[in-house]
Length: 64
Image 1: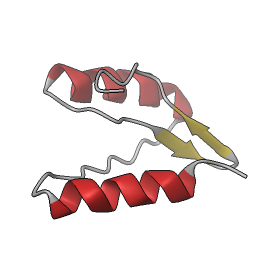
Image 2: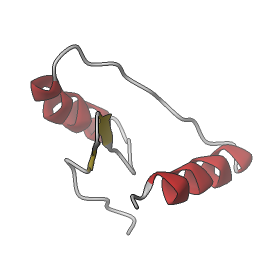
Image 3: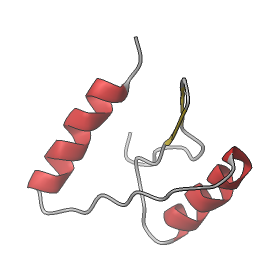
Image 4: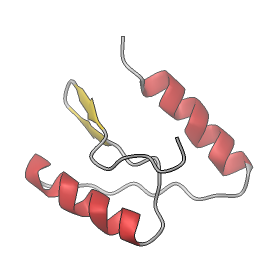
């Protein structure tokens, strides 16, 4: 019902290409957009927030 399966497939593809997967734990959901923009400013892409019953994309995916 959600995109997690497709996300996992993309993560696997990216790792097989030699790229990195970075997971950041936030204590509060309100921190997620700030972390997202910080990752983006350092070259991150395909950035999502996974919370209880929610998957959000805070930053536009530049390679979509």
